[in-house]
Image (cartoon, rainbow, N blue to C red; front, side, top):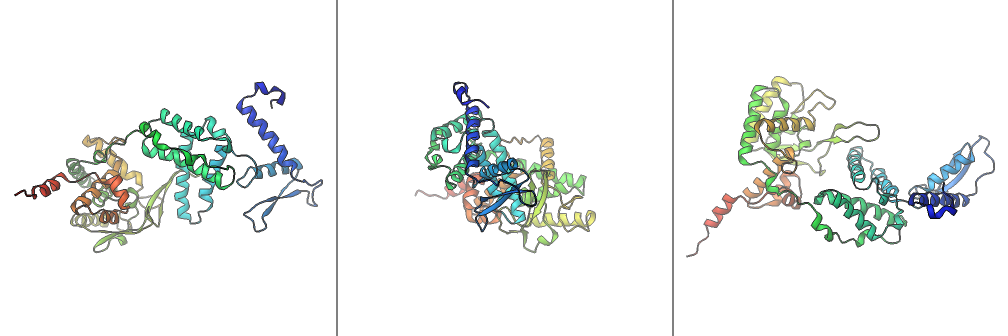
Length: 417
């Protein structure tokens, strides 16, 4: 380590290492370590721990050096006395997101969220000086500079900028809650100044399939069903189109979910992202994305589809309880199977599926929600109930605009005499 007398040669990293050395020395000197081990050969000491009823817990080790290291590691924890870097604070943020989730199925979703947030953090902060700065030394100007740096480096849309903001917001809020900072500089940021740097999203009306494309897609789906009668993904995609459902809501559907007048949507298949030593995999959870069951009415077109689907199931998969069975751990097709079928089909039909315009099979959800809103005279609440969104989300993210034919019909009813 660099000597104090060599201060004129010190880098920021050297200064940080020197501070950590002195900090560790000061913290350890505040403890009275045992002079000899217990009868079992272990040295023991108590440290504060608010999570315990007694407010403390015991640490033990075979040597004093090992015990001192354990004490210092404890002090570096969320309730410890050491100064925290931005990176360390955000690690605590992610730990907190998992610590207080008890339900196993909700934990899966939380782990997915943490995996996504880790990738965002790596993109925006890893390798920067900002992540190694102590949280109590970061100023409003520092925060603005890291935002500006990323907006110059990447073409960020509003959603991407929000992910950057969420990391900063969560970190400084936790630091403030834990008394690591006396004031939260994040609350003073005026994000409007960055509006001119945000890349505009493609208009929603361009992120759906045209009426002509819809007809071609359904025709191709039916052709594939005739060519390969047991092709489960072809049927799954058709049902997703007819219902405007989320991709994960289709695979878990069972025969018992089909009622006389409605299809019950109460479960979802989620993609569990790779975490720790667990590889990416699919799991069926007993709830929808919004944790609210839906009853989707069986329309004439959906009724005709279900009749064909059950004929196929009775012939090829008579023993399966699922509408879209597969030979795997869950017994159903996975989310990717439907998308891959859709992708290959669009390639055959020369239908563009650019990520900037049409977001995969989710585009059919925009078609369905827009059709229902227009056909119901703008009833956002009805559309929200049918498709499992809030009215605000349905309008902002899915509604592509008024049907010009209906608008023209209404305008022609105006009289001026």
